[in-house]
Image (cartoon, rainbow, N blue to C red; front, side, top):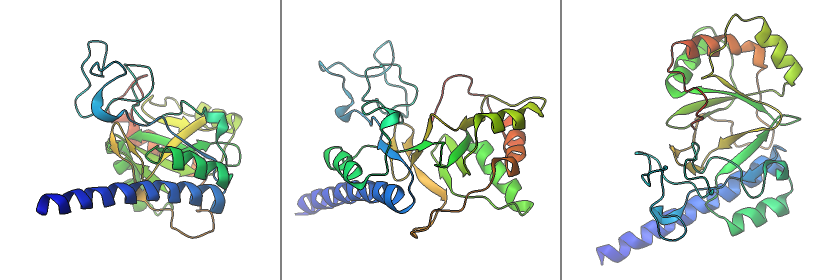
Amino acid sequence: MREILGRRRKLQLRRGGRQALLGAALHCATEWQWPVLPGVGLRTGGKQAGGKPSGGRHGRAERGTRPCSCPDPDCVVPGAHPFDPGLFAATTDARMVRWWWTNRPTAPLLLATGGRAPCALSLPAVAGARALAALDHFGVRVGPVVATPTRWSLLVAPYSLAELGELLHSRDWVPSSLRFHGEGGYVVLPPSQIGAGKVRWERSPGTGAAAPWLPQVETIVDALVTASTSAPDGGSRLAY
């Protein structure tokens, strides 16, 4: 009897998680007018097509990660990127959003950044916590903050590449562990599940119909640069 009840609870949790993803996607798209699309997601069962164990080039999955559904066996952001549809398919249309997550109920929720949508700055999780503490200490208001076990992303008001270039040109050095998500980029939003683990809100955007307030990038970039300087540099291997 206990075993049956346990199975029922697991099924209820799975259904609840799927409904939460659809609800979050619809809220972002229709209430906040944020263009969204489903991420590629994680491969179920931990096996590739043909029954072979998934993972790196030697057939071993990295410890602490789950295999990506994309064809790349060495994917460095498992589950946390667009594939089919591509990034340019991002939309605010409720019918399309509902169709996507009805057919792929566990797909991660991606926000296409730039244009009229929020942009973001992301940095290693340890550096993100330091930066947030410093901003709070100096009374600098921040907007929504997305957290994964490995990286934090701070959402900011839209900026252009020209504005970003001018902002960074005045700095002697910007660590590559600090990354900028503008036009043509994306950020994974809660309550997604990706290879690195669960995606959550470190600073909640609220649940109201009005789009969340977003800071200008220039008001927070210095704190993020300083915090990233002392954090391990991830180089070109992205991680979420």
